[in-house]
Length: 99
Image 1: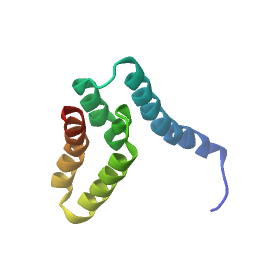
Image 2: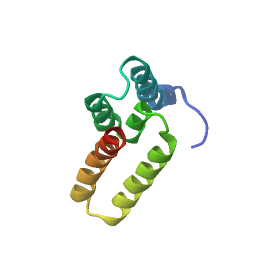
Image 3: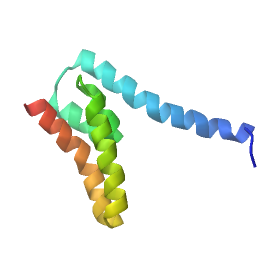
């Protein structure tokens, strides 16, 4: 059950794309349309913590949000955890862009 199969390639490409596309889009929009609230919140709603790339100084915020998301999944019922996970990143983006 070990080894790399040809059937693993599409899954690997999907994982790489799901990581690179939000980062590329956030960095690109940071240059073209910097610090626009609705763009930042939309990126966070679509891509979760990776949407924080839209504003400079994103690495600590991404790590904090990932910790919150993991903790929420462990401690709360699934329905409540899903709501918190969906809203936490856009709320952090709102805080970052409004100060």
